[in-house]
Length: 304
Image 1: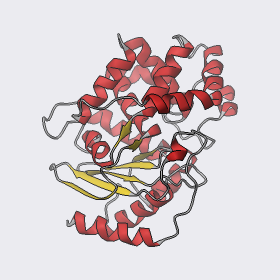
Image 2: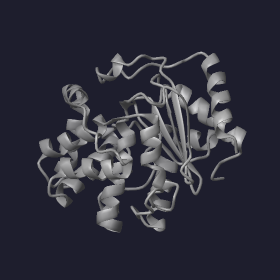
Image 3: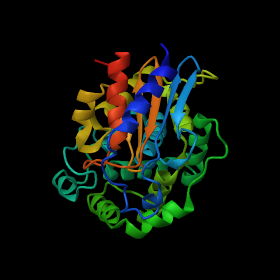
C-alpha cells in the first residue's frame, strides 16, 4: 500500500478544514504550543516509516505515556495487576472523584488519571529506582537514550494538579495506594512530561503491532496474550469518555493525550501517531481524530 501518498493526501485535505477546539491551557506549559502544529508518522512491522508535516517536532505526549507505564507494570506483575485497577471504560471524566469513591478506590481502568496513578504506585513498589528505571524502559523500547523527563512540564503539572492530589488521597483512604503519596505523584507527573516526536512515538510502541516484539531486534517485551489485552484496553478505554465514538469512527486500538497526540495500532501491520494540539470537548485532538477516520476509511484498515 502506498502509505506515503495516502497520508500526504489526507493530511493536505484535513488542513483545509476549520481547525476547531482549544489547546489544553489548564497545564500552562501546554498552552504555549502553536495551535496549528500538525504531524503524522506511520511505522510498519516491516520497518518502513512514512511521515508528513511536523512529525519530527517534539511534543508532550501526556497520557499516551500511560501505555508505557502500563506495559512495564503488566510485564512484571502479570494478572495480579488487575486486583488494583479495572479494565472497564469509565464513561465519566478522566479525573472523576465521584466514580472513584463509589467504587471504593479501585479505578475503572489504567488510562484515567486515578488508574495511571495506581500503576505508578505499583511501579514504585516493583522498581528499585522508579523514575530512573521507568525512563530506562521507555528509552529501551524507543531505542533512544536521549529521552528524558521535562522539568518545566513537571513543574507546570504540579502547580495545577489539585484534582490528582485529591484522587491519590482518596485512593489512599481505601488502602489502594501503598507508597508515599508525594513519591507516586512525582513519578506520575514525570511520566506524563515526556516529549517525543510522532516518529519516535510510533516507533516506540510498534511492538504492540508486532506480537509484543521490538521489530529491529525481535526482543519480546510482552507475550502475544499480554499484547492482546493491552490493545483491548486501548480499544475500550484509550480516549476517556469518547472511546466508543473513536472505535466507531476509526476502528483501531489507541491512546490520546491532552498534548494533542493520538497513537493508534493495527495489529500485525502498523502503528500511527498524529499530533495536532487543539482538542475537542472530550479532550482528544480534533484534527487527529478526523485524520484517522479518513485514513482507516481510505486504507480499509480496522480491527473490525
